[in-house]
Each structure stands twice: as structure tokens, then as C-alpha cells.
Amino acid sequence: MNLKASLIPTRMSIEVLSSGLQTTIQDFGRIGWSHLGVPESGPADKYSFSLANRLLNKDISAAAIECTLSGPHLKFLKPMALAITGADMNPLINNQRIELNKVHAVNSEDTLVLSNCLTGCRSYIALSEDIIANKFLGSTSTYIPAKLGGINGSPLEKGIIIKTKENKNYKKDISYNYSEPVRHFSNEWELKVIKGPEFEFLDQKSQEIIFSKKFIVSSESNRMGSRLKGFELNLKKQRELVSCPVSIGTIQCPDGGLPIILGCDSQTLGGYPRILQVALTDMSSLGQLRPNDGITFSKLSIDQARKEFIKELG
Image (cartoon, rainbow, N blue to C red; front, side):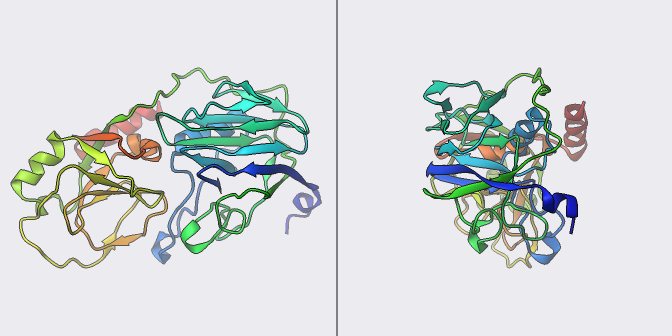
């Protein structure tokens, strides 16, 4: 036990007055446990999540609040600072509009309200204090199917009190100045992909369709994956596959031919053909896909995808 950490006082810090559609506690996820069948979880949009923490001079993996499609109504029980990134859910502090990608101070009894977003899917609320939540395999990320992490392994509900503790690294007079272009989300997405191990299982017509037609995100989508509709893909022949490793961004072709893009809560093994893999540079975009968004796929070679990733790292 870290004695110093155990001596830092914890407080009832935030009351959930209403929860939004699906609001959860997430940190950077359970990385390194896929060989045991444990999904990574963590933020669906790692870029926006990391930015929220950087704005507050916190470790990018620190736990924050992920909001999906519509956000919560929170009441603060003590002073702290916060930053909101990702999809624009029209955030209001005490009924006054606040900017995204900025640090804002709140006092005891202040309220924060996030409503619906029109583009994008997820917002992130990072706090200057550290969120206290249940840990599993070293991570507080909420994994709803198995009720792991977060607060009782579930989305936040009305009446829940979020506890926090002081973060010694946070300094009020220093904040990260965001100078890169703000990400503007759209309802139309072009995702860069590389061919998957079983791409050649598709018949010739389907191989052409996948790179020439627009697919639509189905309402049957969640953190486990985005189901697509619009065009059915066909295999050259039906065949039984041994379950193989899959990861976030793997695009499978299940029975019925409608592709699925696996998300952060997806399984670690799958028996459907892995026809495409989303490039690392576009991985965070998967967390912002919402029902009825349009998607087209742009083909990269492995070498091109590697160069794009290195370029993005700067």
C-alpha cells in the first residue's frame, strides 16, 4: 500500500442529478490483458480523453467521465476545475455556456449540464481532482457487460455521489494551452484502413463495394462495436473459421454480410473474417461514430499506414 496516497483525504465531490444516455467512468483501459480474454475498454475516443487530462496537467491515463450522445446534470459539492473535450454537448455551468478544450473553475453548489450533441458521439469531462472508482486489473474503466470498474460496474445513475481526492500535481496557475486545430466532427466519415488477413475471402464485387460505396452506422451500435448497413458483402465461399485474435478497429464480415467495426469493449477473439483494420491515425474517430452517420473506407498499405502514424506523432 502507498501510505502517502492512503493519507490523502477523499470527499463526496459531485452529485449526479441526472445521468444522460450512458455516462461512465473511464481511464486508459486494461491494456495487456487480451491474452486472457479481457477487453481493453477505456475511452472510445482516446484523443479527446487524453486532451481533457492534458488541459489539467494530469496524466493522460487518469480517470475521467465519458458521456455518450447526451450528457449528465452534475452538482459540485466542493471547488475544483474541469475541462470538457470531444463532441459538443452545449456544456453549461450555472446556465452559462462554456467553451470546449478550456479549463473552467467550479465552486461548491455549482451545476454542470451537458445536453445532446448533433455531430460526434462522445464528450469527456476531466477533473482537477482524481476520481475514486472500483479497480479491476489495475484499471477503473467501466465495462458494463461484466460490471467491472467504474462505480458498481455500471453507468452513472441519478443520486450517485462521485468521490474524488486531491491531485497533488494539479496547479491552478498552469494550464495546457491548446494550439492545435480543434476537431470538428461531421456526420460523414472517411476512415483509413488496411486490408485484413481474410480480405481475400470477399468475392470480387464485394472487394470493390467496400472501397466505393458509403455505409451507414446502424442504431444497433455501442462501445462493443459499430454495425454498418447499406450494402451486404459476400464471401467467395462459406467456410468455418477458427477463432482468431481481433482488436479495436478490426472490421469483420459476419453472417448476413453487414460489416461490424469492433470498438473498445469488443471481444478479443472472433470467428468472422477480418476483412479490414482501421489505421491507428483514425482509431479515435471510431468513438465519435453515431447512428445514421455515413462511412467510406480509404485503402492504405501497411507501409502507408505506418508513415501516416509517424507523421501524426510529429
